[in-house]
Image (cartoon, rainbow, N blue to C red; front, side, top):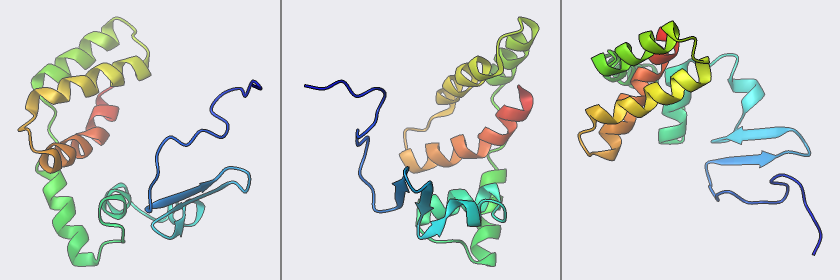
Length: 129
């Protein structure tokens, strides 16, 4: 048995949505090369692409963006935690990890709804930290 450092050759998951070729330096998501789409797509467009396997139409994007906006406000517990973390000079990554964990407090136990709420809050959580 030979030693292989790290995760080289380990398949973490199988998906038909994306393709990773580390040796070629390629990440393809829903048929789009990441380096070609990332500079032009918004946060909402990329989330839509990941969830629906296609880019949104103008109308779809408007509806999706409005749905996300309705869930942007962070719960009070998250805001309090982030303020306390900042006052204690907690590293940003640790503060974000802890803050993300508090978002389960608003779960309505519906995976699709919870995912939308979590994604909607992500940009505000990062700004608040």
